Length: 307
Figure (tube, rainbow, N blue to C red):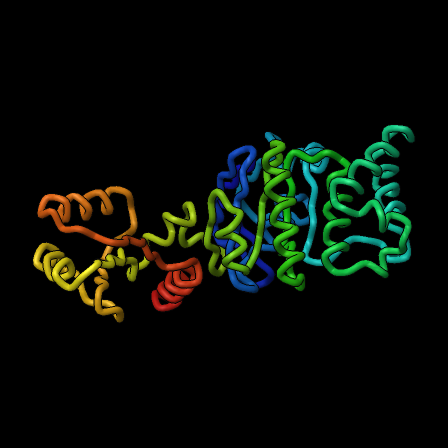
């Protein structure tokens, strides 16, 4: 649904995007992860035709961003870091404004407004001016306005910035529902748990370059520190495991061992096979891998050190 090759953008001597390459499959959540200033918002602006690139090519929904901007705009929706809601209008009036901008027939527009208000839990607040809405309600209304045009691709640029934990989770569920309906989501965020929760694939952006890409689990396995924790019913079981697993170390608990592992299925099968061959009984097994915080810090620190 989105293809990017060699995308570059600079402001004077400041390079913001330095040869960006991306591929986003249809009906998935793709997350571009990076710190402030990494180039996330610039990438979204170029892909949504709000900004021109200095070099490179990008296609969205089969259309060239530079040569077919109108076709791209017809296929996408954009929800930015800051709400586009007019707070002097009611929720329903904001949605009706969008149906007018999309030139929908009046009856169809009215039906779509009612459906979106219900879908986003805003029916009861439809007649209230948006200035009275909570942050979570404004975000939901903003996204509902984006959906008036039935986009194939939605760019969500920092969609949960400033939201409380409950509102963030409500937004996450909305994103899941949209993807289940076939919409492609391009998500930029600096919340690592958000990318971990939602994204099918993640690209880590650092100073305009992708420094790593993969699923959350693939990225986590790149970072040292993963291990399998084994718990035993008695000291005899632990001692037997130690004799088999020379690389294991004792954990804080007297009946637990830590075995270095990348957490992959192959590594787990090999570990269990070694224990089973010696008839070592394990009471409990759990896999511990680095989280995306560890991934992000390690990858960006590596690149900073290299420079």
